[in-house]
Length: 477
Image 1: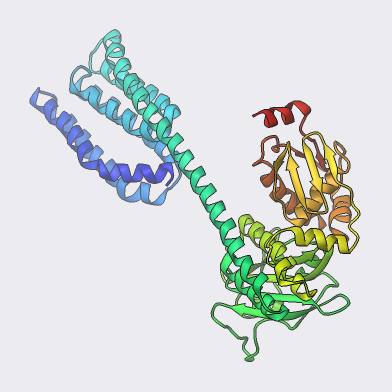
Image 2: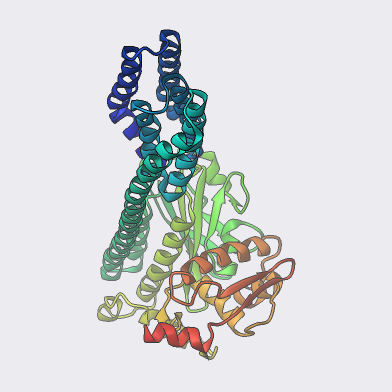
């Protein structure tokens, strides 16, 4: 729940108490001989303002900036009350109430702003009512400063608790997703044959990612891709009564499947938008509006692609791209093990050792990169920053490996594409930018990983490894 939502709830919950306080102060003013016209004007104005605030402004304008706008409005009201009722006496309770209320939801910054505005307005109102400047500042400043300090402290403590709670929720969600992935890998490994493994693989993608449909294509010889599995939650067919999905996809040309297969990176799909590859025609025809295509990579060989499709245009996020790419990467090794006739015991390990074995079979020859604060092992895709493991997808690892091959040097997107993904005309810059973004986000979660990759505007990217002092500090901590 954000600050604005909390503020709305508090406004509704404390409305009766605030009205009672304000109108009680005004009633006391009437009883002590204050001009009834002035009191009636204040009462009517406050009633209109409260109604507009509760039923028009707060429900429709959700920015926290509106709370700051209310601080100013309430300060003017407090000054008016002080000018009409006179500062000494109960009128000081109204600016103190507003300062407390706003500071509780804006922290120390809001407390300072509210206290300064409230003190200024009440001071001017008291002077207008006939109080001396010394009396006005003596009365207003201590009361409002005390109210602001107390509520600012409470707000700051609540913010810290909320941040800790959100971080715990994020970690729990991450752990939950990881556990779900591992659980979905098990039935793939236990499948009796390749066809069953592919169907289980597609069904697991539906479960893990929440897409509406999944299509799996594997290499049919040469550079062609043949549809092997299609699963959808509703079993939709196209208008001609045929199953959704073209039966063949080419690994040549500019299609999304060809780019994903050729570059070894998951791509976001959509009908229109920056950074999106066009959806396949067969997906658009039956109403899918977004999706992800991820390569099935074993070693350096792309053995197929998997499409995740959604009818929701906003369904694809960076987190879901990471999730899809990671699961497809892990699962591909298990599916390939079925195809190569591996024994059930070896398939049931559910580990990245399959990747190392597959890469050894095709003659993986890239050396391990070790430098101060950074280690990259291409045989297993394992990476560590200052000794802290950082799990990366295959495409992210390849990009980091290409940058680490020339630390400190600027590498253009074209060279990164050639080194990490192979040829990628047209969409190369977009692919590099998207992968760099995801890579930076993962690296930043490790100590000394933030700022590892720097952008050199107009030229490209370079890798700045952690210094020996930074690496030692992480290890010692």
